[in-house]
Image (cartoon, rainbow, N blue to C red; front, side):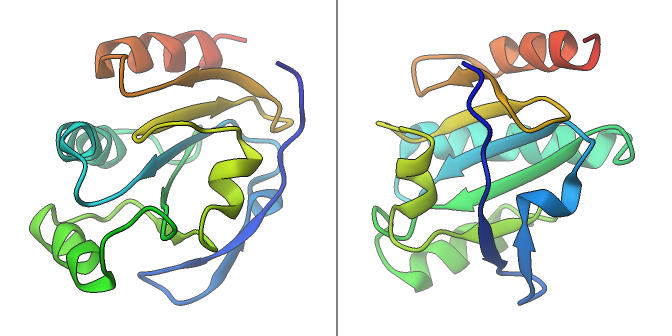
Length: 141
């Protein structure tokens, strides 16, 4: 997997449009989620804890709420509040970016290298420990 990814989406917390290219030269963790998904309810809080504990200069963490698969904005906003998310939450245009990464399930976590080429993809079948192992490999490249 060496495709290079590019997108721009609105950050729900800052209301600013963020582009993947804003983080050029840094590896990125990108997690796609929806509020009604039991696996997302488990994985997103793990990613939030990881985000709070990491060195943000080394690695970028972004989450994408897949609005085309989401219930309602109210459900999404309640999920963000309940989980006290500080990790950036980007709002997909329907399933535009979700589809760009060929996602088929939520949560899907994509690890991008510093040039933003896809290195690893984790789905609802993977555990957060698998993602952490992938992050370790990503940072050692």
